Length: 407
Image (cartoon, rainbow, N blue to C red; front, top):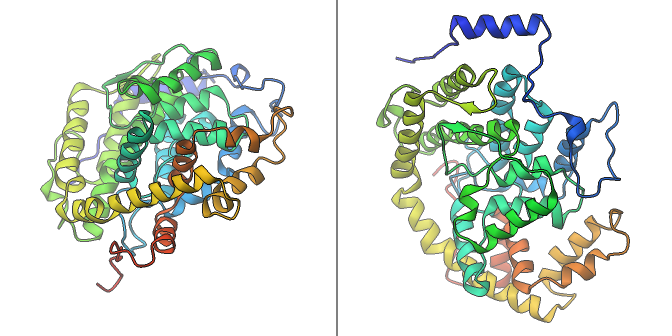
């Protein structure tokens, strides 16, 4: 039987009373406090406030389109009913905005963080992230994490002066680190933020401890987990990996997508309203942790997925990385790397005017060739990756066969 929680009478009446009195949440982030790397640019306008600008900078980013063909969880299925990463970021945004609206937070900031949080994600989901990290670390000693790379995309590769608050929310969205309570940290400068970013490349522990500096970032972080927890189950049933939801426990938050979204949302609002932190009750937090573990044990470690990923896609990553690294070493303007990536970025930044004394192309070519290869590979969609691999290695034994609609 479905079980849907609802807000308590006390909290419902308090929220309604505060709305009637036009009472604002004193902990919501204010638009006028926005911090940008280039403070003299992108002044807010009446019709285009600070974080609306960030939303638009992200949605019109050259890499935003590529969400549409990147794995969320299930790779190589021709199935219109399963999530791609584009749909996931919309789900995150909707859930976070629902919570943020009820708590009286800054919805534009929530939307910006939500829509940008995975823009640096690799093809083939977290498996692709692991493969790319192994290669990057093996060649440079540095680490690749998709949340950190999302910041690189928005701050370094496509330079659009996205705010500190949005970038911090993005780097801090690590959905593998669920907590019962989220309290914002203090962050007031790009100098401190840049140190945090660099630490994530060199310290294996640093990425785990990135914290949002706004309540809006805290809401988005927990909403990321809520958005994928039940939807991954729904998608697995759609493709036949699972028979139904009954394989999962049904404790406190339910086991279906709709139950999980509703019950997590209610618990967060109930325990966070009027407070300077985001929280949920202990029983719901325990149920969340257990549900994540079940997803890992039943879905993410499924034998068929592991065989496809480690047996085919991982060696394809290795071969492609080595070939593109050779191209980066020679920097031949006729190469795939140059034509499809370097010149693409140069064109995307040709009208960027924040630092006129610096040529984007010159500064980008000064990067370690491994960074350039990683930038390119992380930007790829699943289909593009497979197409490029077949182009580079036409007679190779590694092939990807999609599961079709009628298989």
